Image (tube, rainbow, N blue to C red; front, side):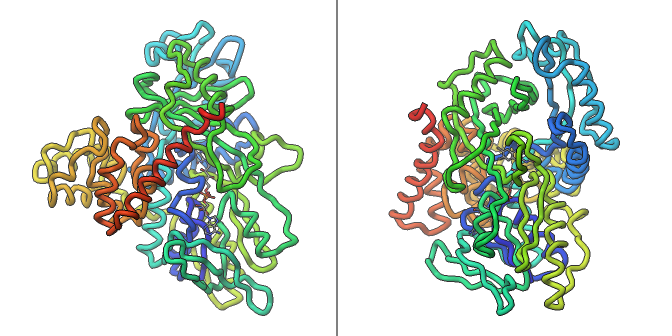
Length: 533
Ligand code: FAD
C-alpha cells in the first residue's frame, strides 16, 4: 500500500504509523537508519523555549504535548533533565523576561512539566553550577526538558514498524519514481547498494521522507517543481567532561539571539548548535571551522573559568535542518514546523518538523496519503500510534526497571558495573534483557568497549544480530555513541570492535580492513575543521 522513502525519524515514523493501521508498507533507506540528519541533532525532546521569543506559541504547545506523549511511550529514551538558563546584567535575556518565558513554558505544558521552573538567585545558581561564574551573571531559571538518543529513537520506530509487518530495507537507494499511465506515483526503482541489484517496488502511494534530499525527489516526480527547502546547517562538538564538568544541562543565549546548549553526557559535554545556510550537497555536511569557532567562543563566554580551546575538542558533527523556506525570513527565524505537500501525482512529501513531533508527523503524512490510497480502494483507517508504546518501553517506571536489572546481575555477569546496567536500561529499555543474555552466554562480552565507559562488547554483537548493523560507523556512531563520547572517538577500540562485528557478519579480511578504513575516514572528517581553520 505505502512505500516510504527515507529512513530518518520522519520516514520511520510514517512507516510505523502506516503499519499500525494495518497497511502493507515498505521503508527504504539509502544508508543506515538515521544516518542523515536524525543522528546528529541536539538530542532534545523539548518544547523549544526559543520559539516563544519568535511568538510561535502553537509550535511550543504542540511540542510540549508531544514531549509528554514520548515520555510516556518511550520512557527509556526520553530522560527528564534539569536545565539552567542563566540571565546576565546587560546582555542576553533579562531575569524578568526569563521568568515570563519559563512561566509560559510551564503553562503550555498543561500540568505536564518535567519540572516546574524555579528562579535561582546568583548565589543559588553558582552553588548549583560553579562553571557559570561570571561578573555579569544576575540569576538563572531552572526548568525541565527531555534528553534522548536520536539514532535509537529512529531505530525503535523502524523496529516497531517491522514488528507491525512493514518491510524495512536499508542500503537501498531510490533513483527513480515509478508512475502509472495516468501519471500517478506508483512506486520506485532502487538499487541495493550491497549487491548492486535493481529493485522495483510497487505501491499504491509513495511518501517522500528524505529530509534534506526532499527537493531531489520532488523534482524527479515533477521536473517543473520549484525547490521549497532551505537547508540550515547545525554543528555540534564535544569536549571532555573533565574540561567542562557540568552538574546539569545549560541553555545559554547568545547576542545574535541563538540559544545554545551544553549538555553533560557522561564522559563528555555536548555543545551546540549553529544555524547557517548550507549551500553544498546534502551528502557532504561537516562542521566548518567557523562553526567550531562560534561554539567555542560561546562556551568561553558562558564558562569563562573553563578556558575551553580548540585543543579540547573530542569530536564534531553537523547536519542539515530540512526547513521549508519563507521569503524574506532569516534562516534562524525560519519556521521549524512540519509541512506536508501532496503533488498532483499523489506523491506525499513531508519535511521540516522535529524529532520531538515525529509521532504526529507520521500520523499526518499517512492521513495525507489517504486520497491516493482511496483511489485504489484502500482505506487508511485510524492512526494507532498516539498511544502505542515503543518496543523498549518497560512495564515499570524507569527507576524500578533499573533496580530490577541491577537485581538480575548476579546470574548474568557480576563484573557488570552499576553504571553499565543503568546505561543498558536507558539505552535499550526492556530489550536490555537480551543484551544481558549475551553476557550470560559469554562472560567476555561484559567487557567495556572503551575502558572507563559503560558500553560493553555485547552491544556490538546485539547490534549485529538484532539491529541491522552493517558497518563500524553504524555500531560506534549510532548503536553506541563512542564516535562522539569516547576520548579517542572509538579509534582505541576499533580493532576489537571489527573482530566482534566481522565475526557476526562473516567479513573477509578485506571487508574487515575496508570497514576500519571507512570508520577512520569518518573520524578524520570530524576533525577536518582543524586543517581548514
Ligand atoms: P533525515 O534524518 O535526514 O532522513 C532522511 C533520510 O532519507 C536520510 O537517512 C537519507 O539517507 C535518506 N534518503 C535520501 N535520499 C534517499 C534516496 N534517494 N533513497 C533512499 N533514502 C534516501 N529536533 C528535536 O526535536 N530536538 C532537537 O534537539 C533537535 N536538534 C537538532 C539539531 C540540528 C543541528 C538539526 C539539524 C536538527 C535538529 N532537530 C531537532 C530537528 C530534527 O533532527 C530533524 O527535523 C529530523 O532529524 C529530520 O529527520 P528526517 O527524517 O526528516 O531527515
